[in-house]
Length: 66
Image (cartoon, rainbow, N blue to C red; front, side):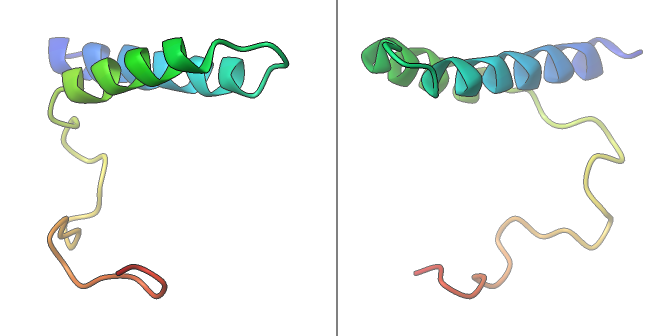
């Protein structure tokens, strides 16, 4: 696995675990907010093949998006 692929997978896993923690009773939501922002910013470029070739992040808004 390429180094960026491993970093991406690890960061996504941590974000998922953090989301599960945030749903627990008594979770420290200030901690969740600080860590989730840091993790999201640290995401490397997604590995090739993660999104279809036609994917356009700047494409049209989905229904319900402003």
